[in-house]
Length: 427
Ligand SMILES: O=C(O)C(=O)C[C@]1(C(=O)O)C=C[C@@H](O)C=C1
Image (cartoon, rainbow, N blue to C red):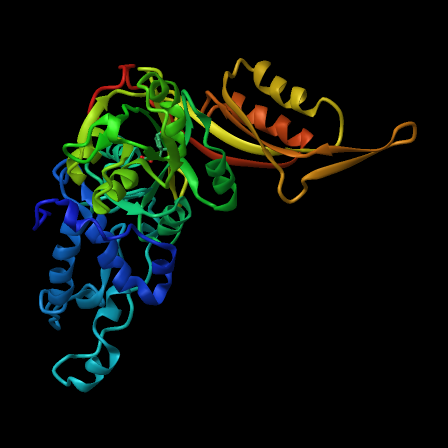
């Protein structure tokens, strides 16, 4: 779809998808809201959320008249049924008030609901429908770029929190969520590891995105005028040394996402504040690039994982990675034993991360000589280079299960094998 309005800093007020909008009764509002925010790759570059909102208002007012119902229509409740992931849902029913349907004798009653078929559970969208990918942030965020890299023709759906992106997939409003999990400079994004466990989505892919940060300010603003720099905490951390080298010893403030920082500066006409964000964010929100490539290392990369309601079927015809999470059981050297289950089978580990075990944060160990000792309890997240279709991986996990009280496979998915290229401007 084409945007109806040119992006302008005056059109920057529409928020990303929010938790409250996910209540089922609000779906029509939500549907419109996310459409207004979404970006289609590759043609959608340049369409702001405000543009979409305008198109949406028009779409919403036309939605009934554009979908005539005829008795020959064999597709069930086709006139008021939306397609999510290629599957029919009844979300649009709410767009026509029930009373209106009852009063208006010219509108025939909807036929009975269509029976579910096996394809309703397909993890991929059905032919012709565009993959919808939820991400945290607003257009111009790196997560949006990651969605575009993973699924070049997708419709990227901005969400105001990671939690919302997860829920959008769980409620079939989106087909995938894209989640940053680690950065080459800043390290792990811990909160997202916790979210992976709290939700039941599956990792179905990964992308590594070169992250090229710019210092953005309103047109005409010079570095000397600045007394504040705002951005996502990861972006601030990735540019810490460069900011100091540039003589910018100004207050640094964390906000939810990089592009949101640019949007905020533009919307509030803040002439003393700069944002760290992408070149695309500068373009979308009418900002100027004061400094290009301010990440402390030119090979700055963030790794994202893609999440879906269903796992993909693991294969062996290309390199796969598998991500697991486990908790210790009683005994000694448990971590060593678990890791050796992989080492003995020549399976390389690419990542290990520990997070506090929230359900069981402390282990009490009785020791008659020293009194009662307390240990912190952890959950361990491990990524290894093998597919769950491989016998050696299955055997390794069978062994791991013997030493652990809890084990979950988060996903087995193709590795991102894109050849290495340093970050470019505009990423
Ligand atoms: O704020 C954004 O633009 C994001 O997509 C989030 C995020 C992150 O969470 O790490 C993604 C990539 C960069 O490392 C900086 C920020």
